Length: 551
Image (cartoon, rainbow, N blue to C red):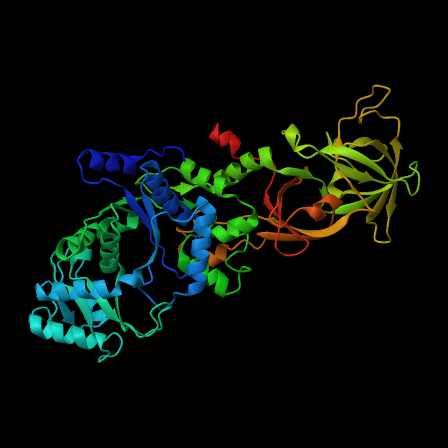
């Protein structure tokens, strides 16, 4: 792990010098109500890489304090994603917020006994109306001055299930005139009757995140609670909780900007809607920004972490171009991916002067950029498939592929010349009849003439069938967090985000590569062999429109 230096590590360095921390301990606390996305990758990277830099510990803690939407499916998926992204299990351990419910309850009781919490009968709307505004102080709840004894009795009754959902909350007694709205007597416990994925029906009251999170951090010995910038205004409440509860440790919260990426959504609510409304194939749809979707698309952990590094770690929010992510995976695969030939929109090419029934095998490099990758033998016959786009009956200017009377080099094999075009009754081209220069040596004409164009091909007799999924951005709008007035983010769902090409013809060696293998289909892009039989997902195109921007 390379050293990661940023404003957060500067803070940690100062804390170490001041003697405030001996062993750095960080955590990633996802709520198990959905799958992780690339924005989560930034939070994981920051906490994990910082623990690595200081030879410290990194915890995974599931924030399962809201049972309504939480599920073990998400728990398992989150753990799998983190281990895939980092290449290891969290060295500090795996924990659950629900493990600390009893401690949270004890802390709440301690606050009540100290006169710093009270049971309130106001409903959500009433509480919101009395909270005040940014320029006006809030109003005290009429229940704010209940006695300690009454509050203890009511809170015990809340736990015992004597009140209906929403009838009462436990609120911290802080300051209704505070300029920070989060400090205006925030609710710290509410009544919710919902089956918990781990605790079952043991509890009917649950702590709110702002109360439970600092307690969890303190119990686990977290030194630096590193979270996204929207929690900056919550920091005074975080510190109030650890200062006023009987806890063994005082963690420090610091914030960083979230990762926002063009032409996609990061809101878990929006991602859930896309999945549950059937607008995508599922959480792992390769168009989704989820880590499982990116994995199925063919992105590697290294490319995602590289993207996060390049996007930067700062406090100011920014919108990162999705083409940077594409550039990162393209750079990696250009060096590492196997090369294979695949014809995505096939048209038949018959070589009339090639012996019927003859098969030759040509040695073609697995990766021209890596000699150690070796070669493979590719079968060649007199009937081939080539790309429909590699032939033009009326070629545009500077067209260097196959045309009537023109010559082109078949990659790694012969030079062919188009002699005849066969069409069906609808006027569509169904076959090209060509002659081959069988006297070429290593693909070069023996008479010294130059042939500029080179195209790929697949033997018709040996080809395997497959379908290729070509992906574009899921949304046409660059910044989906700033949709024009009167519209919805779904109005910008790209109808052309998926194009599935059936009847593709692939060289036979592709049948032997395992699921999950990343390949360059020469001249067509980078693809991954999908879990669905016969399906190949395009990871990214060959053309890098972002490289010039980086330079």
